[in-house]
Length: 390
Ligand SMILES: Cc1cc2nc3c(=O)[nH]c(=O)nc-3n(C[C@H](O)[C@H](O)[C@H](O)COP(=O)(O)OP(=O)(O)OC[C@H]3O[C@@H](n4cnc5c(N)ncnc54)[C@H](O)[C@@H]3O)c2cc1C
Image (cartoon, rainbow, N blue to C red; front, side, top):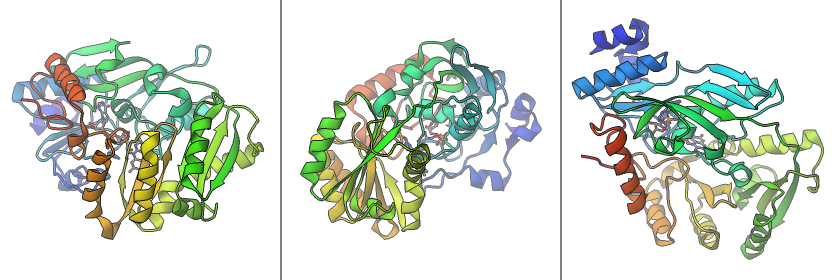
């Protein structure tokens, strides 16, 4: 197999070296699943030929971006890893029409570093800056900006992908792959809308009572000038220097917030983006992505506080990040049951992958099964991730 794949992608772009196999046997969870081979295609046609070969030899493929999945979405025992890492170019930047066309393996930070030189941005900033555009599209990654901009859907003009039968698409029909966790196709290119970074002002609201905080969220959710609305529990608030309170950090697209100074606003945004590394330094090790209704946010926040679980997140869209200490690994099981009990979900942010499969609703399952029938009936791509098919 190595020889055949070398013929497609070139010998330096395929490896069964034990060091590579070990590196690609991990994502950002603790699970280790060692692959058989890693392949780094450099072009869309190489991706197509690799998938064609996989179909002929019944070889399952796991698609991988930066490997930051927290749901074991991009690792697979004895499988072929197809990495997008070497397809990471900006193909075309059209400032007049505010469009950028990129290869799927480009990292969000690298893209935005280039766009910032032209005073432009692709306005979604996940906590992990190494996330690839392909990974973000595959998971329809929500970020703090999703409150204002909605899903990546409306920022995606066209998408190129190769489906599980090696058929090539360049299409506006993004639903086939957007948020489908690589079950239907390997995303190779994307045409994205970009925009000028908005000028923001910020308010910091501190609360001692949860009921007051949730009342304020209800009001702010109706405010169309709110750009992001971020919740910090007391521990996170302390870690960021806001004292022992619940905090709402609110950014507006107008100047109505009290913090308006450009440098101060930038500092607060950077502080918010550093929350993950700050909590990791405090010993929080495991990360979960609870998604709950505003009514149930009260229960979630209370549960986390009682169980010494750190919590922050995008409260206006109901998506939080819950941080568990290393010694509290067993608590995660109880947490999952609790989330089910309050009709919440895990996997909306990080994907269902292998870890959150039991949170998939029957209708989501049906939709993914239908996609498999249409685009990957041999079940070559990401088998047993999110759903079990065939
Ligand atoms: C510190 C940290 C912070 C994080 N913060 C956030 C956050 O703020 N919000 C959030 O939602 N998630 C977050 N995550 C989770 C993770 O970063 C996201 O799930 C991210 O979208 C994964 O991108 P990736 O490029 O690393 O993809 P991978 O982890 O490599 O893959 C993720 C999934 O996408 C599929 N995939 C990847 N590339 C392609 C492609 N080209 N075509 C088709 N399918 C593909 C994979 O098969 C897999 O199912 C965080 C993770 C860490 C470790």
